[in-house]
Image 1 (tube, rainbow, N blue to C red):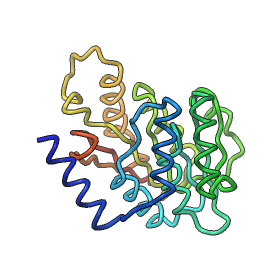
Image 2 (tube, rainbow, N blue to C red):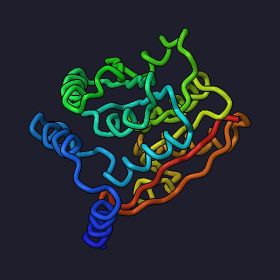
Image 3 (spheres, rainbow, N blue to C red):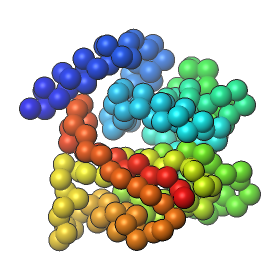
Image 4 (cartoon, one colour):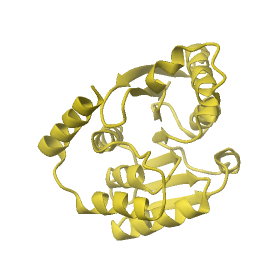
Length: 218
């Protein structure tokens, strides 16, 4: 079944996305530099691009840069004068992302901040509100990251959280996997928090069976 999921993603990309040298080079550079191949798929990247444009986002926050593949998609959605802050734990990943962003001609729009995202977020006390937030980092901290996204956002801010289905693992209430525990805590937080309206969508494709949360700050 997985091969068919991949084939459908390839079909979607061929029909609706086309070739993209900057993104292909980014993935090749990530692999050459030893980064794990855990970027969003091309179709998911285009979805982020469209969602950010639909939100008329001028300021974007990304938690989890990796090699900058999703960062490029999001930065391309920004209008003239727009900006993106992206948080990355690993200095090596951040250096690779900087290379990729420079090659894509987007470095001037993007501020990469290195260190634990919890600390980077806590230090953000004088930021203008973000219009769009994409969270794709350590899953055990997802609920906290959404709390911070709300604090740093405004009424109408769009929040997307990746990898929230985990091939059905989200159903495992007795799991000792910290990623599943963190994902379930995210759902508990969203279901109880009156400041956000949210749903989640399951996905299959190049990234197997997973899904994302889509939320709006009220």
